Length: 384
Image 1 (spheres, rainbow, N blue to C red):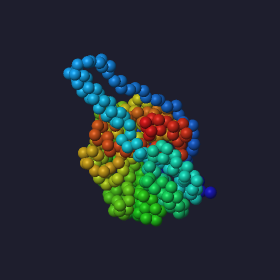
Image 2: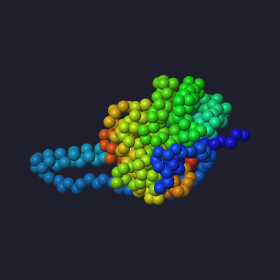
Image 3: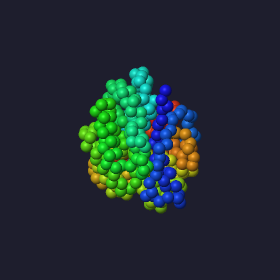
Image 4: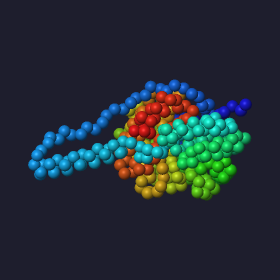
């Protein structure tokens, strides 16, 4: 039996490249680590608290005073209502989930797929990033012999959940040596993307390239190539966060070199080429959930502002992790559903009108999320 191997979508390339005080942000790195999915119990979680209380307005009995009071109450009602709306997901029906090769590399089970769909509906998830393949150092596609099973899964899933968008997840771990985004690689990735849509029956592809540095023209050329080959099918991009925001008010991940961000123009250039953007907001190395929450809020505000300036129809998803501890980069007592969801809500409030481009959260991943975490996802974000 072939051993299932799966790459964790955590942006670990940046963590290895940009460890504090070691290498410059422009240096190439390699990250071909694979992770075998495993179940676990959930970490302890930090639940935010707080609320908005209505002012205590004393009654009055003449018409003038009553009219004034009525006006004040109306304003308070509007403020409270808008605040309530901004504290919830922008669209209660749209969240995303990463799915492992245990679903796409083995013959599909209709009852299991039905259970998966029910879980997605219950948690208001209608985007699925299902594992397909990874480009290997010898430039071959990992697991290609399993593509027929992936196509079978796609057919059964789409019949069970026709309103969902099903993406084929492709990972390209750029190491600057054996794997680069040269023209040959761009053609190869575009060709497999077209195959995933045309032959396997997926609604689109999710490109997970790691790392992607600011102003990387080869990455933009890749997106253009893929877009040209898949036509009207959906194109999603898994992208890095602004690891070390320039704002002095935002906490800085301790393992990443300063200046590791995408500027606004580069965010916009990517947004113009894709339908959906998924920010991989985990593996920060923070040791305090409040820092992680504030950092997440910044990502929401930064990316939505960049997209809003374009006025293009691009959906933004922000990652929420549920996997095992991986010190020093990842501590599940710090980075978890509660702290991430608090950051999403704070980011929505700070983003103002631009928050309409945040479509939801992207839970990473199905194979590491247990019942307690699904319950937390509903209560903290998906169903509020």
